[in-house]
Image (cartoon, rainbow, N blue to C red; front, side, top):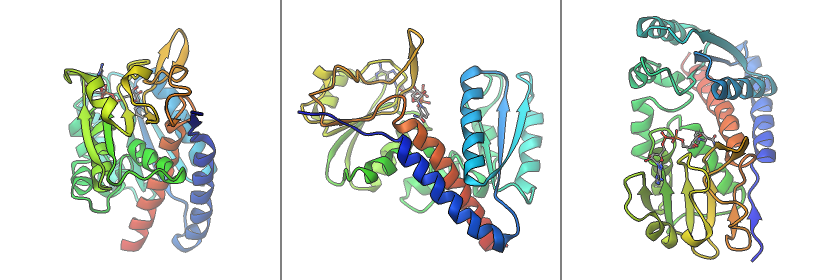
Length: 285
Ligand code: NAD
């Protein structure tokens, strides 16, 4: 079986161009371009890279990015004060706090302090609650990007047996909710799952988001399975995913590459979410 590679790079460019043309039109009626505040705390190198990707995407989409780079010693009071200010600033439509935060900061309190209408990462309990009810919301970018990728390649999930490996609040859980909202039969696995392979072997589509390099191997999935690899880690200086990409060639029906698969889609969905927030705020003005 020839394994199809599900690239996300070109689709992400298309999405950003579509967002840019919609912003061009909307800008004339609203009288300004959308604004995205990006809050980065500390000097974590991968976070700095992710923020620079997001800033570059903003330039292409016609979004004004407003960077706030805070020291790693920033206190809760300081960051909460900044978010309160951003919540009320007219020209700010979206607020993104780059994760992970330094351990002395209370992540859930910080994410919960963002105005849900400006919560372009979709991590606020209000937006997560809407997602779990299957109602329209600002949805987390990575799982939303996964769903957009499946739609683009014409891969339906309705009625299918799927497994999500990884149960974090920002990837695994919201992805599982999106899949169940689309009527897939969903199993969620995590670090305490006793025999991962029993579950992954049953799946028609395996989604993996653990950060464990090459966790999902050929003998753990059925022939013809589709593998959606969300993990990003470094192995011997190279960026790799959770799936053994080489070993799955000729066995899986399709697989997303790392890099170049889900990663670029995450950034594209952030641009879509910022446009969505801009539109919502323009409507209520
Ligand atoms: P996390 O550490 O918060 O969660 C990891 C999850 O994987 C947990 O639920 C844990 O129980 C599970 N897990 C860990 N080891 C496991 C194992 N051996 N077997 C089964 N489950 C296991 O991480 P996260 O923030 O959800 O990110 C997961 C991965 O996705 C990371 O590699 C991250 O870099 C990547 N990521 C990619 C994008 C993207 O745009 N492609 C976006 C966000 C995160």
